Length: 120
Image 1 (cartoon, rainbow, N blue to C red):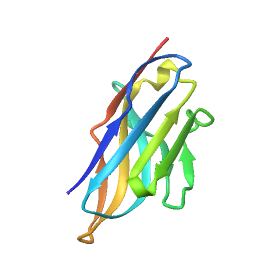
Image 2: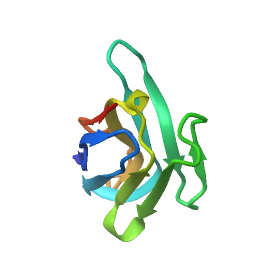
Image 3: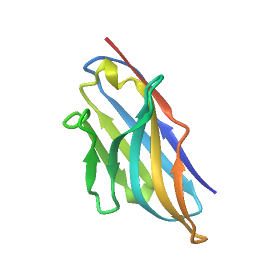
Image 4: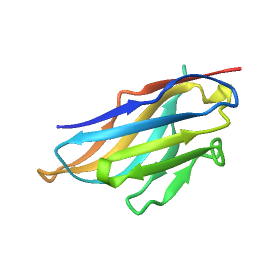
């Protein structure tokens, strides 16, 4: 059993900052790519940022220069630092991780999401 738990969402004014965290726990052998996705009301879930085990990052054009994704391998945790937030960043943010379990299974794991609301 593997679990991802996000934290750090909340309400912030436009121009403000938030830091999201996502910790993976359970029967983990290794974690490959990790990432953040978001889903606004009535819209599809879209990629925000990803980070590989080799710490190669990728960002959607809408957040480049404002958001930073990092990871702590020792803690099995991925972070998303969000600066200069805009009302259009309002969404439920989901953590994703590609995990190999101790039993040898490959799993695509998702967190339950954390709500970020940016007021104008």
